[in-house]
Amino acid sequence: MRHRRSRRSVLGLAGTVLGSATLPVDVYGAARSESSHSIPMGSILPLSGGLETYGRGMDEAVTLAVSHVNEAGGPLGRTVDVVAEDSGSNAGTATDGYERLVDEERVVGFVGAGSTTTSLALAERVADDGVMQVSPSSTGVGLAEAGYDESGAVKYFGRTAWNDVQQGVVMGLAMETHLAADTAAFLYVDNAYGEGLVREARASFDGETLRSVPYSPEASDHASTLDELFRGDPDAIGFVGYPGSGRSVLQAWADGGYGGRWVLSEALGSPDLLRSIPDVVEGMYLPAPAPVSTTGTETFREALGHEPGLFSANAYDALFLLALAVHRAGESSGAAVAQNLGAVSRGPGTDVTVDEFRRATDLLDEGAEINYRGASGPVDLNARLEPVVRFELRRVRDGSPETVEQVPRSFFADETPAPSPPTAPPDTATTRPPSPPPTESGSTPTATPSPSTPAPTSAAPPPSPDGGTGLSSIQLWASGLVGLLIGFLTGNAESGEITKSALTLLVVLFGGGGLLRLIQSGRGPSSLLVVGTAAVILGILLGIYLRERGITLAPSTDATDPSD
Image (cartoon, rainbow, N blue to C red):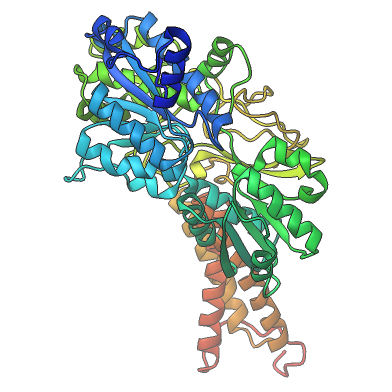
């Protein structure tokens, strides 16, 4: 894997080594000639700038994936030659690097970029250039529709990171179920990432949103922003930002005594931020992805030799999938990769995982399909070439986030086909006794924390369907008929209006809650209550209607009635 140097650093190196201010024009000519039959690929990651900490880890993971692929013979029996470009955490710098990869290296695909804003800038061009882009870390909502060709049939942008639609859903869930908020305001970093995530969080929150306020990460004084944010005294604040500027915003909030309860975006869950202001963030909530682990999760960790950084596993998977797609397609072109990337990432097919490239290509050569289950999780790219992952809602205690609720993949609407059976039981969080550990649907519980995420100390059962117990139509009809009869007898009887009104109010309240549960969970044991309650309400209304027209079939229960 070759790392491209900037012109300034290359000239400096030449002056030191050769005693000259210049280098030969084709500084990489020898390397290219020796690998003329290799498959050109690239990476555009933040190796410098504000996201350098993450970018270096992702670059290391791509290098590891390249070694695993090439040691296994490579796609189509050819090695993969990856040129690494530094995005500098800047869209302009990333675009310059992209142009070099396309014009000089003739890449068929690349891993990158880091931030959503940078990936969007590149995704506008990849379809026209016929280059496949796979980002390991850009989670912005708008990227779900990015990278399509003119026909709308082929998508040249994919990602191994999640879509922030999921994070927005969990933020709304926290405000409603854990903060019991009726009103909310949102503070967000003024870019594509912030705008997209806040839009989804607002849509997920059923209460009243008072306002959404953008802020600049470069601002040094946040007082006026916070003043605007807290007009109307919102119950909850949803904050979408980055660790550096986020710390100063939260400190300004604490110093100003504004009040309110906060739900932070996943990016603000940086351990450094939480440990630096533990008293400020105490009790705040934040969503966090918690992908189900695979056998490849531990294999990746062992091969890396240390704890993976954020998005490192996603970067490994991005390069590995690009190479698998080339082999399945039978040719090394961007269009071929784009049309085969989804097929190698999900079932049906034989499971393959980290450092099993030779096994995967052997299966493909035999005409079999494969399902890559990666370092970051099952992957399972959907029609928009992005995965849906399990999430957790965490609460900060003593400067460290603790899991309070798991939200399984099945909770999120998705187009992803059902994955093939897992190669290993997915890992789950520890739960408070005596509740059973929450798991993905159909998975086997285990007490081992997922290697891909910190082991939480506690968790509550996730929102999930009613235990998987199906109900027949006969049971539901029977519940409805019994409820209708009870309701009719109640409504038709000439009983006291106060008693009847109280009974009706209770039925409506419990029925309303049951109906919401049915909408959320589908057919299950609670459906009996819902159907029965709805039938009781209908029966009461029917009984009252007939009684007031002189038709009374039920005996009176009023002790003061002369007819008793």
